[in-house]
Image (spheres, rainbow, N blue to C red):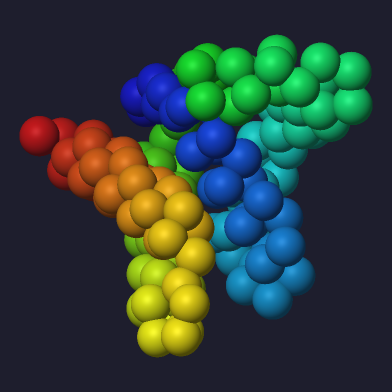
Length: 133
């Protein structure tokens, strides 16, 4: 068991992916989503409310605040790490496709490269936790 701390945007990326893919994936992904569902619904609801009422607070929450999952199990950490790998790979594919366009969206490329790098760093830290490094 370990505490996992995510930037809110990282947690949103993870849980959004799990939410949209658990019907297809099931198994560990479904278990992880179910375990963290209540926390996800609270964060998602807070973000939705702030997006409508106070965009500056929404942006601050998304980019400058963190969330900690207390006592995450090794299987949860491993599943989260594997999901982050999948998300980062999808971002890389989007970057490659965007770069191939006649007029690529450089802001999109920059943002996805930043997010992909951050998710990889988080995944690396999670992998160390599961190995006990």
